[in-house]
Structures are given as structure tokens and as C-alpha cells.
Image 1 (cartoon, one colour):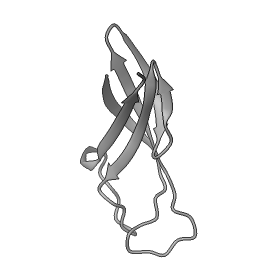
Image 2 (cartoon, rainbow, N blue to C red):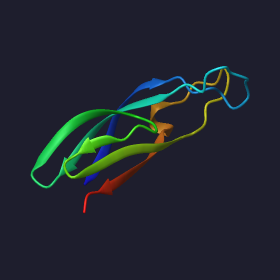
Image 3 (tube, rainbow, N blue to C red):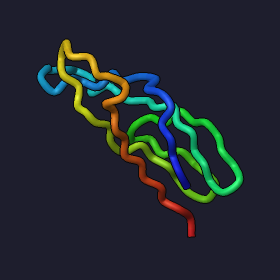
Length: 86
């Protein structure tokens, strides 16, 4: 299974130098590729999605947000986890 991030759809995470009442969320549009198939999914951090015989989860997004400092889209790095079925 391969995952290729295409675009950040939402990054409303609370900046590390701010106090927020909501932690926010990250949603990344990604191309998921496995064998002879591929599909596009919007993956929200921490929310597993059923993919073939397992669950794919976006588990981390870097860099952390800072108040009033925009993140260049090329600077993003993502960590995904796949838990396959038995």
C-alpha cells in the first residue's frame, strides 16, 4: 500500500504558541495505491478509514502550526499507519 498526499484540504490545528478551546484538525487529500488499483481519499488525522482489508490512518502532520506564520505547502510531511487484516 502506498499513500501520496495531494493537497491539504484543512489545517485548523491550534498553533503551538496559542491557547485554543478546540484542538482543530488536519485533512489531507491523498491518493492510495495498492497493486492494480488506486483511489483518492480525504484522510482526517486520527480517524481510520477502511481500505481493502485494513484501516489507514493519518497519524501525524509536520510542521506544527504557529500563530501568524503560514506553512508553505511544500514543507508539510505526513505520517500514515496501515493496520492490515489477518
